[in-house]
Length: 261
Image (cartoon, rainbow, N blue to C red; front, side, top):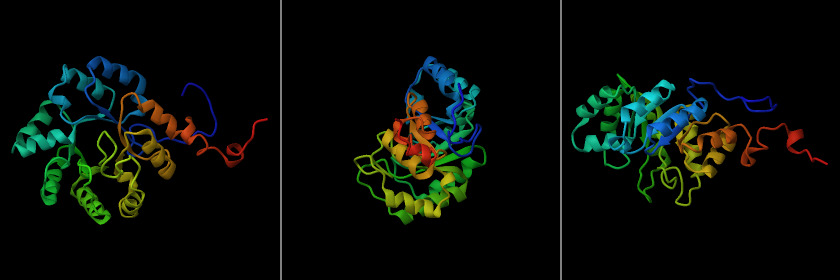
C-alpha cells in the first residue's frame, strides 16, 4: 500500500483461494483492459467476460492476453456455455476453450432448463481439463428455489468437480439470493452456509449495499463477484474499512466509540 495505517484487516494475498473478487467485463476494449490491469490487478482474481460479449468483442485475443499476463483467471460467461449446449454444440464449445487457451470455465443453467444430473455431468467432464465455476440459481425474476434445493445443488456440483459454486444474482442484483428490491434473502444465505463451506461459494454482489452486507456478515475475505470494472477499488476499500459503510467494523472498540474533541 502507499502508506502505513494501523487496524486494517488482513486480506488474503494473490494468488488466493479465498477473499476473491471477480470483475465482470461487459465489453471493455483492450485499451480499457490495460488501464484496468494497471490500476486494479492487485485486487482482482477473476475476470468474467459477461454473457455473450466474447462473441462481439473487438481484438478479443489481445484482451485475453492482457488479462492472462496479469495473472487473472479469465473465463467466458455461463450464458455462452448455455448458448452452445442448447444448440447441441458442447464439443465445439470445448474446442473454443482450447482455441483461446482458456483454463477456467463457467457451467450454468440460468437461461435454459437442464436436468441437474446432466449439468453435473458437464462439470465432471470439463473439470478434467479446466477449473470449473458452476452457477446455481435462475436468472428469471419470481422463480424461488427452496434452501434445501440450493444446498443440494451446490454440494452436488462441488462433488462433481466445481472449484467454486456461484450464487446467482445477475448483473442487476435482484434475483437468486436477492429479493426484487436488491436486499439479501438472509434466511436463505444462512441456511446455505450452514451446510456448504462459505469458502467454496462466490456470491454475486453487483450493488454496493449487497457488498456491504456480505462483508459485515462474513468479513473482509468473503468471495464476491459481478463487480463492475470501476467498482473493484471501491469494493476493496469496503473490505478494509476505508469507506463509511464499513468504517467502524474493523476498528478496536475504543477507537470505534471514540469522540474527537
